[in-house]
Amino acid sequence: MLDPLDRSASAEAKQEHYKQVAASIHALLEQETDWTAALATVACELHHAFAYYHWTGFYRVVRPQHLKIGPYQGTHGCLDIPFQRGVCGTAARSRQTQLVPDVEQFPGHIACSSTTRSEIVVPVLNPKGRLLAVLDVDSNDLAAFDAADQVALESICAYLGERFADQIVL
Ligand code: SME
Image (cartoon, rainbow, N blue to C red; front, top):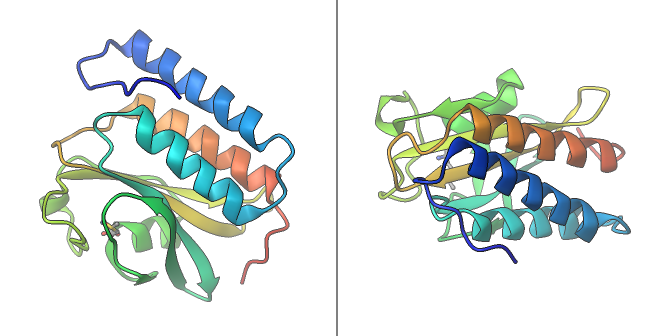
């Protein structure tokens, strides 16, 4: 496992770190066909690779317009999130990444942890554009995530969407 990267790292170091995390995820999941095992592995690899990640995990589409927690790493989160609520619901509804530098400025943000200051939520879409899940990463730091985090996390989510394209979706 990689040493956790902190926010003082250069842009180059961060890009290289994400490259290594992605390589490790691809190697670990090469033979894996189980969706839950894959999501758990991605949450674990990401969470421990970045010092500024405080909560890292997935909300899966389990019925129409509804997200259910897990797998994840960190303190407990809300178990159920309807598409009309919060940052996760907005990402699910719009199918667009939500990069939120200050959660207090996001109307309807769901405060699962009072320490969360910023977050990024990335949809996991299969190649046909069906939503399988969203990846939610929260930080205790304000504006912890930037375009480099977004590009790297979107690439990991695209990989999951391709590998698990036939996951049952509603
Ligand atoms: N912050 C999220 C809720 C999920 S938790 O923070 C783990 C939101 O508003 O969607």
